Structures are given as C-alpha cells and as structure tokens.
Length: 82
Image (cartoon, rainbow, N blue to C red; front, side, top):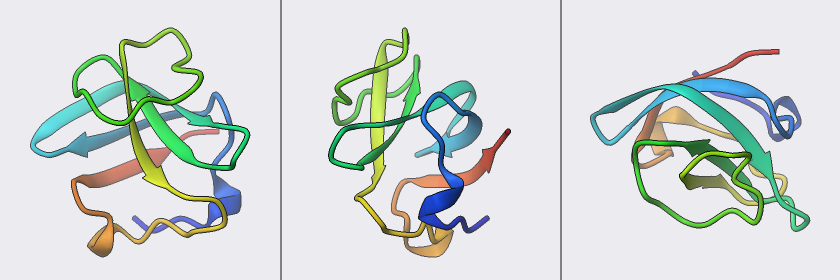
C-alpha cells in the first residue's frame, strides 16, 4: 500500500514485512528532522533517535517523501493504524 508523508504519525501502530520477516508489533517514529522509522523487535536497521521502547528501528522515509511500496526497497505490506 502507498502512503503520503502526512499519513505517518509519531507513535502510530503499524505492521509490515522487512525483507521476509513479518512484523506484527511495531510503531512509527518521526525524528526532529522529519525522518520516518519503523520501530520493532526483529530486524536491525538504521537507528532512530526515539525507538519507542523497541530494540530496533528501520528508516523508511526522509521528510516530505511519500511511501511508494514498489520502490520502498526492503519494506512491503506496510499497514498504518490510527
């Protein structure tokens, strides 16, 4: 699924696949520079400044970029929850 940058909210629950690992317990973290991360406990990635109590984070967007699944690299099946 594709999302606009404005759809992402700090501390928002989400699910996704990173590589072939299913992530069912995760939250979105947005740092002071506007970079968007998926915080979760399964896959080591780029470090967010606030990992919201999880072990790892995975950067998915820079500020004002939209999430286009076909070009997102290793993240697929992203679902955001309100």
